[in-house]
Length: 259
Image (cartoon, rainbow, N blue to C red):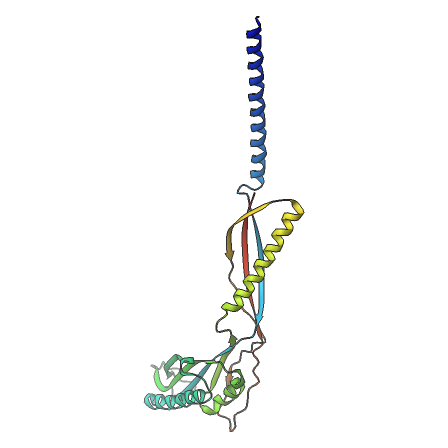
């Protein structure tokens, strides 16, 4: 073999070895990436945290009803309307705005007697239903924003003509600012966890891929719910109603790319 052919053979062998080495390295790298993808196919890691804010309610909600009974439907309606007008006037006189008073029920129901044809306790003759009276229930949903007047208003409603006060609860009229505080808390917790993970494990986190928010649920503390039925009292008595606090909770989930 002459010298030129020998040099060509050596170059060919060297080139083959280089190509073979590159192929082996590529195969090894591919298998390494595949093993990573088996562990985390999408190369994504997510963190979830909850933020909580305790807030004072600023609106009291309650239902006020007037119930009237009588034999004449028109008289029952007239009497009930008069009482409800007095209740609404009482509310307005105590600072409740017209927009915060809403009629949510008006029901006139006949009351039937199924025993009117019986001549004695032992008479079981079937009787056709006979209307003997009418029962009218009118209810308004009320929002009280001046908490200094809650006790006085609730205590004076029976004197104004109401005979049922129910569903007393407390809420926040616009909770968005409190929700934003809770969101910031949750996001700060997630940021701290992501930084800690990266520092302790050496995993490099990339860009944020998604942010999702869970629903929030106000939790009521010391929020009194009452159902009061009473005849008009000679004097108005302030009712001991306490608003308590609410816990507004927001859950955030942030997904990061793993580099």
